[in-house]
Image (cartoon, rainbow, N blue to C red; front, side, top):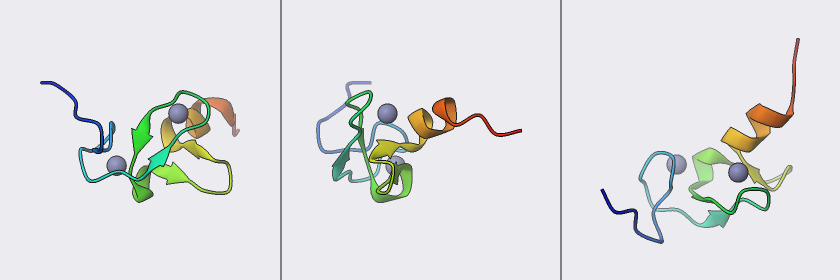
Length: 49
Ligand SMILES: [Zn+2]
Ligand SMILES: [Zn+2]
């Protein structure tokens, strides 16, 4: 499937944020505005034990 700009790359909903780390376009739900990155990057970066 071709991914369209404007749609969240994670869930496919309408996106409106760009992750500053990976550049992935994501929606509100998949974006952490405090970290300014997508949830995928955030999860990958923050190692919680
Ligand atoms: Zn999403
Ligand atoms: Zn990201």
